[in-house]
Image (cartoon, rainbow, N blue to C red; front, side):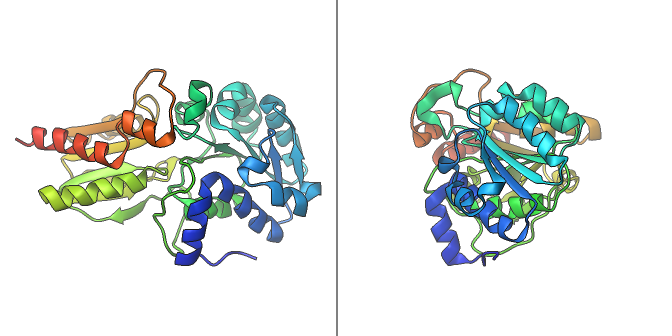
Length: 328
């Protein structure tokens, strides 16, 4: 039975975080869709799939720490008619299994959904081996794979619901820790490839995705309170294909800001920069708030967001500095 998305459920799910909600949501969807199959690279319990495993043992496989085998096996399984969801930590399922993702999913267009858990900085204590800060860039370079980056637990569910009805490969990027911040408090329209306006504003346009959108919203509220800077915030939950609507919105602003928990190379800021050149849009100021092109330090998730300028206060300070400096 599908859950009713409301304020109480939003509060409950936010305590669990995106990774745990992935398993719960897939269980809910699998109750009604017998074609859903879940495969884990030895992370079933920590990705919330323990109840899926108990409820549907015939549709769950722990493949072990063998991501390359997992992708190839899943591609074969999809030929039997299953809609296969495979999950592991972001760097392992994108880098270690890159060739299999490219050939078995992108090229063959197998009906397999890659779920990258612990993407961005959320595996902070385990360091660079577990950071997923280049995953969008890698998957984006492979044709035929939509990339979806939910901003909260409700959007994880909405993404999975859409993907359960989607034929072909896709990449779902889960970020943040637990408890997680909530953006949505009730049901809403979600469509792969269609961005969502979270806030109307007239001065600057902010494009962002993933769990740090909650920090972006807090920063925008502070900008409005302290400097009367009015921000338009767009939730770009799908990076491939990106919504053409965004480029119509961009034409209305002289300053756009892209904010993301990903390397400056190959993510949202690169997509926007490349597209602006293609469309020859006249935007005088594009501020990019990303992770640097370097290996990073270890720490808690909150420590790393602060260190790499993705906390709400650091986002606020960066915009004040660059926007006011640009306009004075």
